Image (cartoon, rainbow, N blue to C red; front, side, top):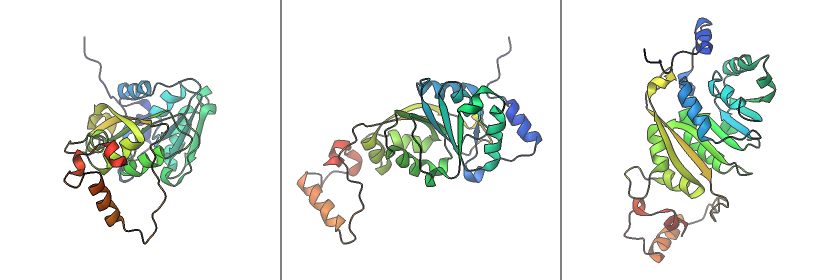
Length: 250
């Protein structure tokens, strides 16, 4: 028997190509086309029928439709009006239409509504600011399953002593439990991005660690403060890459 082809064009993509709609790669439009990966991401989110799900960058709605079939409501945030129209057409005249709410605009400039779970194939250029917007959102959400550029994902999950362990790793892991779920090749997207991708699961720490996120006064001498804390805790001879979250909290 011939092998089943994975990642073939969906009817939605064929229709879009006939209409001459071009995906805007400059704003991160790389549509996830492989239904097996979409299904896997949805399953990893462990959705409940009563859930409200936040999706960022729904594109043509491949993921959106799968989410709508599982949950009470999907709130999709999309900056491109053309993609908004495509998602709306995808569910128009079906029972799923009443479960879809679309926010048109930049998610980084939008006040996020209440949601239980976030599932998204993110525009990669907003990865870092979106992660922290998400993790500082209140009330707490249950988890997020997100597609990132592979190197960014590896930095998120890096542990003390790893080559990629950095400020992003520390700050994210202070606020959430982070797990790498799977790697995703370029050819699972249309158009293919220039980089490989990975899916990561974030689960906010609740209660959060005792961190004060208020801005520091302009006259605050942070260099002296940091040097004092390093000496006090015996860290002056240690490299930051070797310190774990408990060390940084001190």
